[in-house]
Image (cartoon, rainbow, N blue to C red; front, side, top):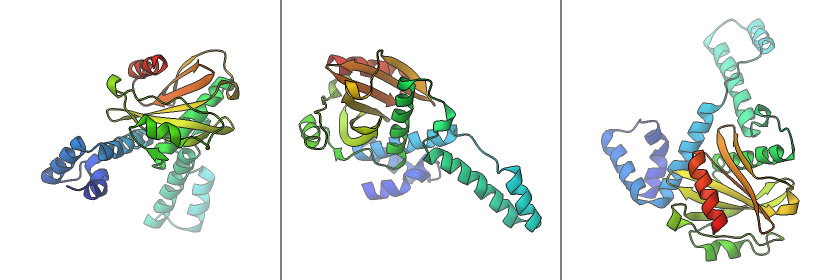
Length: 242
């Protein structure tokens, strides 16, 4: 089965809508193809994110206005459903920052980090440079940032580097390094320490995502993923050691 056919059938595969033969073919292809495995992981993450999003009913004022202009019919019910879905989409598209107010500077940056992580998965824009070779990823940032982010590959520890991109956190461009842990994506946002001041390390859970923050050699690191807290802590430990 080709990558094009697998990509076409991934949503149906996740929803278990494929027959046994096609489902088996997709599963076998994903097992041996790293690129399609990443695509599947991204869609699984997005699916979990949507499932965690709250459902908003249409406001009573909107309901009254619609019902005043028409009888209760299938068309009216569709309008009300569309309105509720629109509120949900707007909330998700805005990064859902209203769910958790930031109590201080560190929490504000944590919210931005989670928003950037979610956007990268929803927009399917994890990579500006996609490679497992640190000698390809690190030089790509030259001339694009006013600092040189440290780039290491942790494949031997079970956290392979898979690429990087430019992102925007705390009012300035940052380096985003992308790592993989089985089907889980880990974004690591790197910037000079002075840009995002913090006097402590962070171990946080924000909207279901786990975060780790630390300072090392004048650089600020934020690691975020839906990976469980224990494994993300292990990742942060081996990255700091490297």
